[in-house]
Image 1 (cartoon, rainbow, N blue to C red):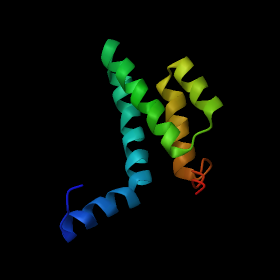
Image 2 (image 1 turned 60 degrees about the horizontal axis):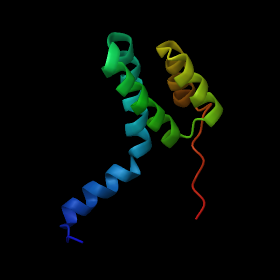
Image 3 (image 1 turned 45 degrees about the horizontal axis):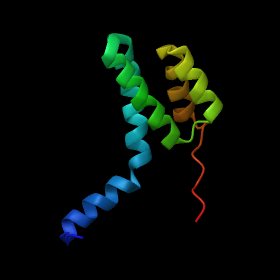
Image 4 (image 1 turned 180 degrees about the vertical axis):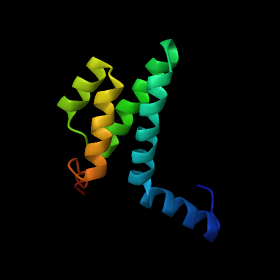
Length: 94
């Protein structure tokens, strides 16, 4: 395991401390990209959206519905729910 400088350790710690906000931002950007993309790129974006929703604590049934429908408008509603606090990530059990 490489030794990281104090600065690098702080950067890594800050990244993981703010990962929920980073994921939330990426998911909202994906909505826009999904409206504009087609074909293989759109399929790849849906895969990314699925992974982000799982990390953000979106219920499995809702994720399945969104992926099945492949409608960016429904994904936009999820982003809105996350931003309004309707969907809250559950802390992991240790």
